[in-house]
Structure formats: structure tokens, C-alpha cells
Length: 314
Image (tube, rainbow, N blue to C red; front, side, top):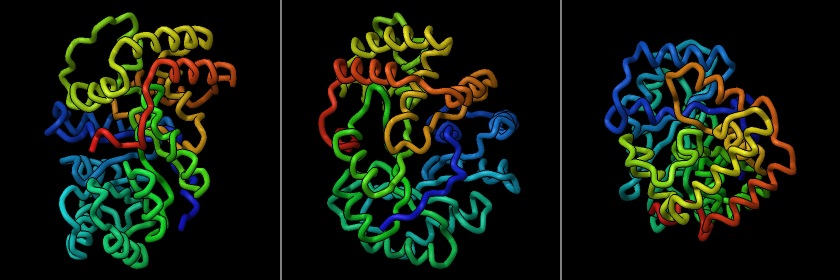
């Protein structure tokens, strides 16, 4: 089953994992409010969070209350099969945190593919019928899992990692989503910020201090062949960026947005107004077909793309 996605999703979605002050440096709420005001003023009205992102849902609930916005949250299941009450409790908790009568999007993360999620999706269907959830999606489902999920519930979006470094989606998932009308929400388009001017010419990056770059994205880069191919890719990105008068990050973001089936690109919240403006501007123009091909071919030469999505992460 599938349904038509909400046309109101921004091309750029603001990732709000950074609001979790257990994994990231704590940011004063007044600073977060100014950043969110900037995003909204620039027409970016879509924000992505999760029930496991610490205070993220609660902060967004306060700062977005009464404002024209769309919030995507995730219901994350790491342990065994939840009871119907546990599923309902997760959704009710997100409703309270986000201060909404209905959740715009709920994306399910189901960590263990060996466990049967059909009863959980049946409960989520009931919550859709009750008006608690508007649209249902998934995140980090492999292709067999998504095939099964579609037999249980109407899935309209799939959030997964997609960048010039990690293109595993193209092996199986992208063709399947295109066939089923499921739109891709791409996270990690800049590989945790490594695809930017900050790392151009760097032969061996210093250990990062933030959680995402130091662990998640460094691990991802290692799994795809290590740092040398990233350094090579940055040189090509710099050449293309110079041609358009853009930044490396803008080119990398634009490349992802133009891939088949990609509805929106998720980039982490930043407090820097110029950085926000650059991210927004990345979607106001398009790389031409020749440069998309150049970057794609360079990426294919440099990086290993084996297996389905979210394979080594499990």
C-alpha cells in the first residue's frame, strides 16, 4: 500500500538530532529559537526529530507551537516486539512533546529485521484511523523489510542515508521506492560535514569531538573505503563548485536532491545564519546533467557500494 506524500515538505528538511544535549553540546533554547525563526523566514518549514533524541521533540513543540510547520518524528524500536500499549504510549508521548493533536509524519525505525513488526503496524494503522497520525513512513528499513511493511500499512516516505559517499540505496532500494511511489528523504548528504571546504586538502582529518562525525560518519567513511577517496572526491567537488560559484557543500546537497526518487534532503540544524542561507540556496539552482554525471562517475570509481542500505550499521 502507498499514499500520496504531503506536497508541503520543504526541499530542505532541518535535522534536529542536534537538539539532543546528551549527544551534542547543549544549545540555549533562545539560540535555537533564533535559528528556527531564520529557517522559517527563509521558507524552510519542515523539521525532523525522533522520540529518542532527548529534549528535541519537547523543544520543537515549544518553538513551533502555532506556527506553520511540518514535523517528522520517529518511533524507534530497538528491543523486542512492543505491546499495543507500548506503541500507543510512544505516539501519545510524541503528541504531548510536540504539542500537537495529530502527528504529521511518524517514521518507524525497527532495528531487528528478524522480529515480526506486523502487529506494530496494525496498531499504527489504528492510530491513523483515530486521527493521531497523518502519514506513516519508515527509516533505515532494508528492501525486504520495506516490502513486508507495505503489506501492513501505507508507507509514503523512507528516510535513509544517501550521499556521494554512501550510495547503497541505488542497489535495490531506490528502484523499489520508485516503483512503489515511496519518496526518499535523504539524511547524511554531506557525510556529517566532511563534504565541505573545511576538509578540502586535508590528508588525514583530526578526530572530531561531536558524536555524529566522530562515530557515525567516520565509521561510514571507513566502511566505504576510508579517507583517501573522500579527499579525491573533494577535489572534484571543488572544481564543480568553482564552475557554478557555489560551495562544495552546496554542490553535494544539490547532487543528492537531483537523484531519482529523492523528495527532500535533511541537513542538521545550525545556528549560523550564513550557513543556513547557504543550505537554503543549495536548492535554488540545479547542476547540469553533465556535472551530475561527472560527480556520479567519480563517486562510483572511488567508493565501495556493497549490500542493501543500513547493512553494516546493524
